[in-house]
Image (cartoon, rainbow, N blue to C red; front, side, top):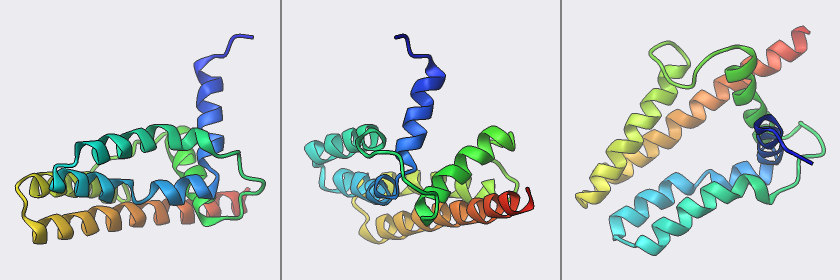
Length: 147
């Protein structure tokens, strides 16, 4: 049986929608920053490996009631069905853009071993990412209720 890229993508998204996948993947960014700060290359490699394999480790969720499940479904809906990107200068994508920029700042600050900047940038990156996802979930839920 041959699998198409769409089949693999479907498996990836359906498994990543398991709330255990999303919640256990959430701290990965902070772990990456910490690994850079500590110059712990094994931890950095482990975090990158975790980010890569995490979506494949959990079964698809039984329902879509969980917030993290809806967050993953909302992101996919936003990109595929609503034909939006994930970064940009319009709301809400500006939040995700800011999150990415703050994450780069966190990595640079970690490399330079500036603990205050590292912590601030890491919190800012996480907060903006969660804000963006929260907006997508509210829009996704509203679109499902309307249809």
